[in-house]
Image 1 (cartoon, one colour):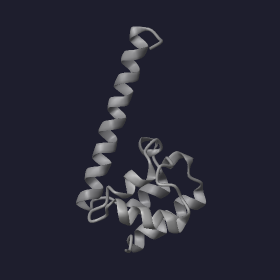
Image 2 (cartoon, helix red, strand yellow):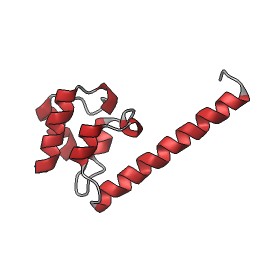
Image 3 (cartoon, rainbow, N blue to C red):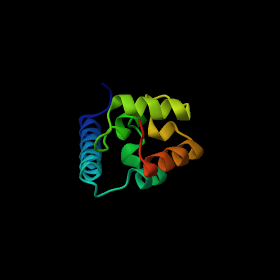
Length: 103
């Protein structure tokens, strides 16, 4: 690992803050306090490095199989990170999640 101890410490603190923010977003989605459609449309920095398949699974009653089917319909790989998706793809996913990921 390169960098000074101060740089490593700062990077670790930043990573821990990002994890805490992602955990908070995940809990809000699970409880229904936040909308996945709005989250995808705004795409905050905290989720840009997370795989889209993982984020879609954060919803209540949505598992990997349902996510896989929804992403196949959109022709998006479930391992793509949110930051790699185009505005159009994020918009289509937001519309899909507003209606609900149907089986």
